[in-house]
Image 1: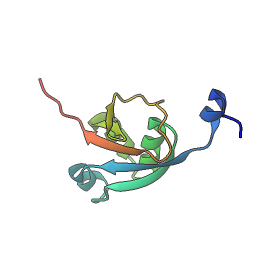
Image 2 (image 1 turned 45 degrees about the vertical axis):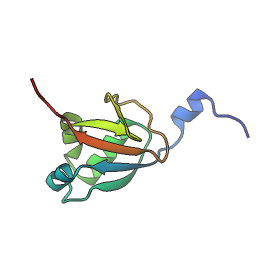
Image 3 (image 1 turned 60 degrees about the horizontal axis):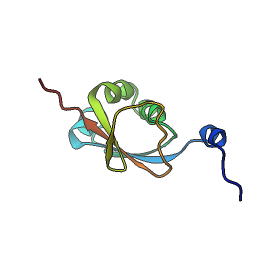
Length: 97
């Protein structure tokens, strides 16, 4: 079996990732649904997939949440590749002064 080159891995098809929302966020935007499986390769792909499920949700995810992938909080970089089978958790941002 040959290893994939960097360009091969970037051009491969979307993969399934698990998306989780907090209870409060899910009550506001998804009628209480907290867990989803979507096909995506990047953070932007996850947000777009969620926006297709719940039109307008993508904007709220971009503006109101931080992101954890497999339990590690990340800066939101829309081109960040999400590993296949990863758990993506959107966390409401805490703002303060």
